[in-house]
Image 1 (cartoon, rainbow, N blue to C red):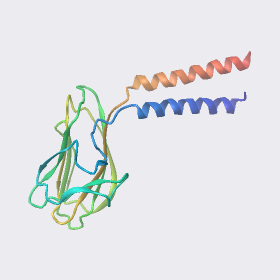
Image 2: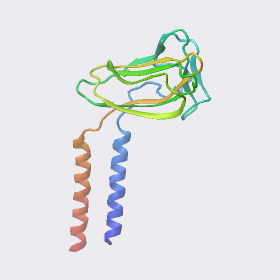
Image 3: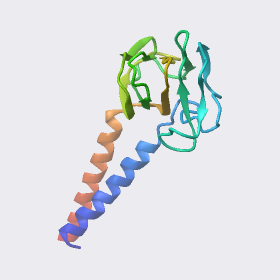
Image 4: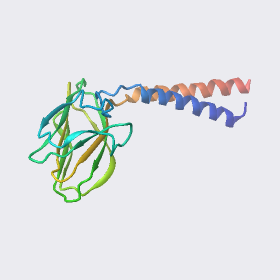
Length: 187
């Protein structure tokens, strides 16, 4: 077996190991892509006028949520089964269809505001990713106000950050495999 083939095998094995690890953390958000066609798993609060689930203006899948409260802030929240002292990655896609600049958006996780937009210009779906340590049983809270048009939200997920030790063990295993195969080739 030549060196290029060996490196290819190690790269494939490391990729499979990392892919399996990346898919392993479970998304703590219920119905984060709104694929039930409803707000199931979420609690709506405040002004819920001009708010719903739609099949147009979707980032991925079949459905997305739209928010256009007119008389005050409104939105959705969900209490997640997070652990104290554990970092999590919050990941979502957001779009603003409003060109008037009369709007507000914010997201809080565990009582900490991670993003706040006021009088934002229109923008297409944008990927937002935050790492936070929200504490145990953290509330994920989205707030919207947009009287002329809508905010669109899709693909919300929260996953625990993989421990560095896990990635280190994967790398160490790959190096051990390289050493064993190389030793075998030299004998």
